[in-house]
Length: 309
Image (cartoon, one colour):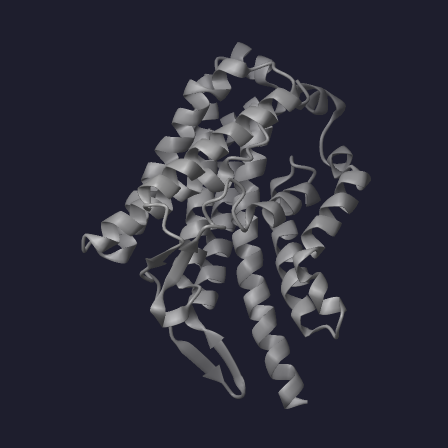
């Protein structure tokens, strides 16, 4: 019983950590989509700005948390500029055009990140969170996984609370529900859309900074050629998490993150050949959610028409 419980607990902790990170990216995707109607496939690539800044500044000797904070600020700037210079100007365009442009922006930022990193196949990252193994009986968990899960969950719940209760959050909800009515009520839709892009980019950047510098434990982490592709390694499951809430419901996107995180990681314990489906489970769940059309459970007809352009 003990030998079985230990790996299940360890994998569950890792699944919760992964799920919390997916949830952060998904919250950013939903916030941007609801506020501006953009399905932001550049979310991962904009987050790469933070990662590149972190690499440069930590190599210059800045403390890891300081470098991470500056990197997040740079990603916020990248997100706001993307909206102001590009997506604001294509308001009213069809979703296909918007998606194609967002993929182009993703390619731009990922190419910029690869250039800044010297087109190296591997770039080593120093960890900025404590990385030690904690032993509870026969169970061993890595401190960075616990901290990542706790940080992501805390940030996600704090964001949801702020979004529900603050004046800025209420204005963002007004813009998301009816952009024209919000503008008639005196709300600056461009300003609040910029805020949404800034927050969404910050959430994506934080997700990358929580994961990639800690993949190798005390040795830090690596940025590989797969990480600097436009969609990276986490965007697809995060997109699936956002689909759990129909791309419009923030709390359900948070739930979706944990669904995708646990389902992917717990498959490691499945017998052959089922454990080989781990890499495919996100795609399978996404197809199911798209066929289910989950947005109809969470958005009114007026909102769906507005988001559809």
